[in-house]
Image 1 (cartoon, helix red, strand yellow):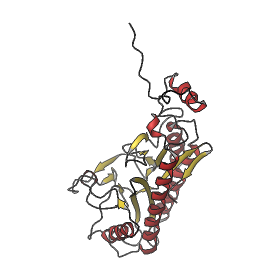
Image 2 (image 1 turned 180 degrees about the horizontal axis):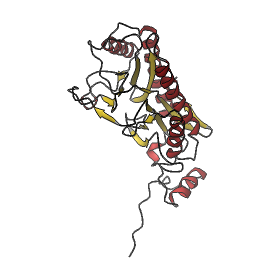
Image 3 (image 1 turned 180 degrees about the vertical axis):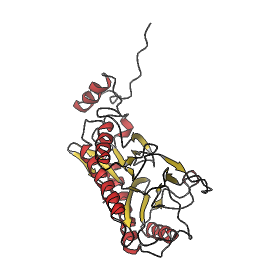
Image 4 (image 1 turned 135 degrees about the horizontal axis):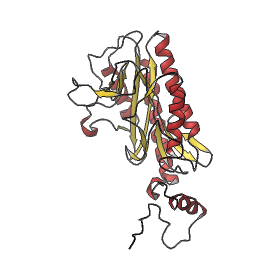
Length: 287
């Protein structure tokens, strides 16, 4: 005797399936991974996430005004904390699974989750990723930017540029009623043209009502795989692009066990946006 597979997608009780429901069920009936209804944000929730995105953008704009050679990454943390407090928001990173600061500051070969320190002083030629997540009125928005400190090498400049292009190409590939794998496939193809490595151990993610939600958004893979993308979903794309191998390790000198470093200790770059899927493509919520 066979067992009927439990559906992920449920129509609203007492209502006939809408055209939207039918589209989702079409793919689920063909064995594809579809979102659960709670991943589809309501208009009210979207506006809340949008407001959080405005503050999150403001935090990174404030960092951009002040970042310079000779400052410590702990000073960047102070800038982020101060801006959050002045705008009634909370940094999601602070205390998250033991993370000790409000922002991730990842310099050169640190791929992500770099911890701000008084002893980490920015030098001419460094590249640094500043990654911040805002909680405002219970809603989350998440973004990161790369900063080049002064003048750097052509190789690092290219890495930073290509990483940003990977984000843009990933956003272009994210279409309504397509699949998460389409995003990763497009990013990986672009990255390979430069013989860079796309980090596989970390990924983008759903966001909005929690820090991390479904779906996981890998930055490599095959078209037509992964979760179905439908209007109303909110997620990040945040490719981590290494100058060399895609492989990474956790810094053994980090007492918190957070800092991720490229295995060959070559530089890494990352850009990130929080995105709303609409009927026409993605809308950036973290400008």
